[in-house]
Amino acid sequence: AAVVTPDAAVVTPDAAVVPPDPDAAILPPDPDAAVLPPDPDAAVAPPDPDAAVVPPEPDAAPPEPDAAPPARVITVCTDGSCDFRTPGEAARAAVGGEVVEIQAGEYVDCATWPVSVTIRGVGGRPVVRDVACGGKAIWIIQGAETTIENIEFTGMAVPDRNGAGVRHEGGRLVLRDVYLHDGEQGLLADANPEATVLIEDSLFERLGQDGLSHGVYANQIGELVIRNSQFLASQNEGHEIKSRALRTVIECSTIASLDGVDSRNIDLPNGGDVEIRGSVIQQGTNSLNREIIGYGLENAPNPIQRLVITDTLFLNDAGDGTFVHIAGDPMVEVHDDVFVGGGTVQLGGDPFAVNVTFRNREAAAVPAEPELPAPSCAP
Image (cartoon, rainbow, N blue to C red; front, side):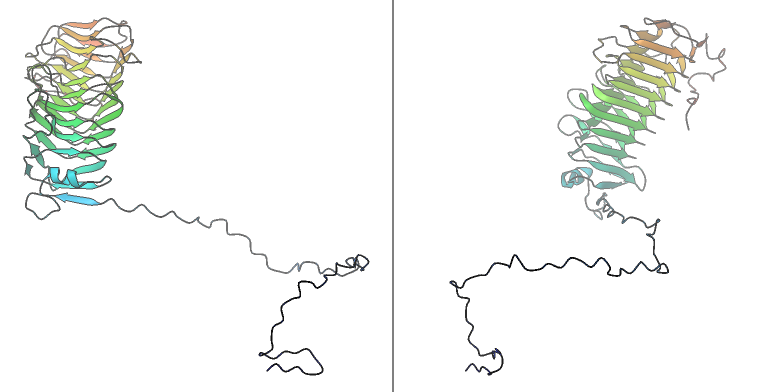
């Protein structure tokens, strides 16, 4: 029971709780109540001059963002000790962002790579050969960002006679230290103005078929860049390099017919923004087209029409024909080059600037055919 003392309103824990009376009057605050202002004479303690002040540390490093997790590695080898036995199996399992390591060995296999990956040969150079996917190529590239390193492709052939080692249908493709040889076409890039191709430190040789296939055939992509590479001895009237790209750059490279039954060494049928520098270009006695470079000879739809050739050695061992054939009205800068051998140096376009010509290799102090000097800017 609740117990109330006579002297104070103290309620024991057992006291009943009385709710507030809803009808009780609530008194407003008294407007005449005095409000005391702060005392102006109140003493305010000044800051302690001897108190230690700790300045902020100026060199404190901001927190580092979390490091990106390492890419997942997929392994391929022929003996069953890896994740997969063939590149085709690895391509079907990839979800994007992987590094695919292919052990040296021989793979009679083809693959379609639908996502962005880095593919590299390890423990030597793996060879992928003799099978084409989709009637197109040994490897079909569809990812937005793909890099292929240290892989060999050979035996590419399809009924349409344009089977490629690598068929590029994606965004950015890098080929580095690859070897494509003895088939219909090395690299074929589909038309896509957003696509780019970079070829570095690679070798393409004995490629071509019926004038339809070539060492490299880039349709109207945004850019084709070739560095420190060799394109040799195309066959069956193929070009070593054929590019319809909006921009084409060839530097520090060797493009040579040697004993190949080829066509032009470099064909640029749509013109474009073209730079060739520091390279060696040779036409052989078996070449069926006696033009070394053709520019804009089909039509010139590319928006920039500019041809720049500098610090390049031309060797016309065929002894006749034309070194550079230009159609249309591009801006032309051809200077500081050396032209060796018979034939017409220039057909069409603005007159070339300062260049040097020699009637043959001996006069130019160049080693006898088939020797090829190294490009002037080769590493």
